[in-house]
Length: 550
Image (cartoon, rainbow, N blue to C red):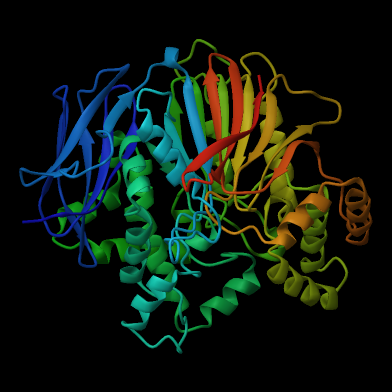
């Protein structure tokens, strides 16, 4: 009899349907059965010896929350009989309820050694404990995980020991993840955490990858990629990373309607073993990134979320370097502008959320250094500076939006267009992580002022280290002396001034933390909370800032 290996994860929800993801120990029929009579079933599919199902649940009633259980071949496997958590529920809020969107990134999932967590309390664990302790209290309506859900290049001691039992760690890639089976170990370690497992079973989630889901600085440059492809281990690592991402994260990002028309999903379900079909898809995504779209759109009433792939969709050639390939950029523009000017349209929205793992607006010194570096690598000061620039780019992780100047300006222009004129949303928020601290920055445009309130909202990490160098560097990076230094560096690179200016209006804040946007009508409120340890050994989320955005 098949058992529940991982999950359930509540992924997509709307007013009438939902999807629930599970990994099982063998082939079976997975069923989700709700207390109000709603239900759904799905047969598992097989990838590389592992079995999965994404169960569509129909017949839900808008504005309700119903408990559910998971059955495998008719036997109940969730909730566990000895569960210390409240029942998992599927909630379907209405527009009148507003939206609570919690987000963050960068979660190192390793359990603490010897009972002490060296990087401090996990913000997701702490959020889960708070929700479980008071199930009737307002909880997030959706959780956005903005990258580095797993760390393929920085494993725990327990996983390192497990890897050593499989292969020789003295051979590349050493104590990093090498193949699909090893990726399953990362997800197993991360999502079996009891608090996180329960939280993901009862709060819908949307996810997107960042570099550590594959490797640090993934797709930094064409030269970087050429060096990686010259190794004898990179191809398997990349294909396994994309395959596991599709199974564990991307599938649940899609709506039931999108799933019914997805040819890959149909292929893996229609064959006894979908490994070859998924591997061919990953190989095509590697050889022709423009052939695959990892970005996606979700509409929550009158809130639109566009989750943008800022890793795999890059054009890396130095003479035409962009964060998004032309097709991806066109898709983003189309999704942002659809219904924007027609308040009566079903596609109209009051709030636009652009999820991109990498911040659009950085501290001014960091922005100027990245723009300068892009000019150096592009040959602005000759071949010698180009070689030096590539070395600096890799060593200092200079690969955010600022390192793609044309894409930085294009995104700013698109945001200004979306936020201006009749039918403009009340807010446009760029949600990001990656940089292991949190801050709020607000842009302005010369000669025009969008009607929408625009903000860069950065929140990271959920659970990871924040070295002293990062704290000092980012604090200085926002200062007036750093801004003057950045201008001098930019002049050396002959960099054109960015099309937008910005100022920091909150932060920087350091710690394991999570942000929540509460959207109701055309109002928006931002709250940042950090996980802190009490003297009695319990962990709590402490409010750091609570402010109106609109």
